[in-house]
Amino acid sequence: MAQHGQTNEARAGQRVALFMAGVGVFWVLVTMIGAEYGWSMRTRAFFDLAALAGFGFALWQTFRLWRARQDEKGDE
Image (cartoon, rainbow, N blue to C red; front, side, top):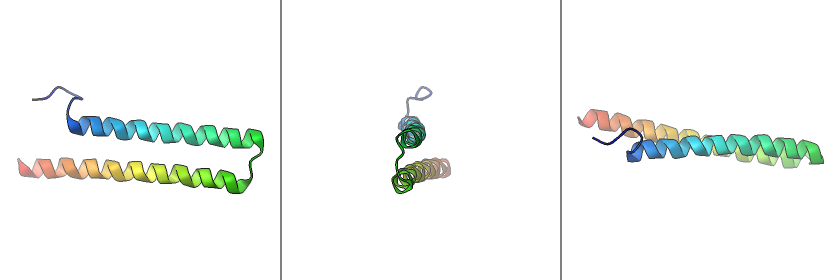
């Protein structure tokens, strides 16, 4: 039996969590920078959509991990 946090599944979950945290930090920083430098609403909306796409990707990856775990439980 593998140690806690050392399985491929655990590492994939950690990558998704780090990606999601990175997208959140990116979104907050870009919002603050955009407000400070007076970027147009169109530019800010572009970065909002990019962050939304990043969160959507993380949600999709989380769903895939969940489905993989469900499939493994059914095989036992």
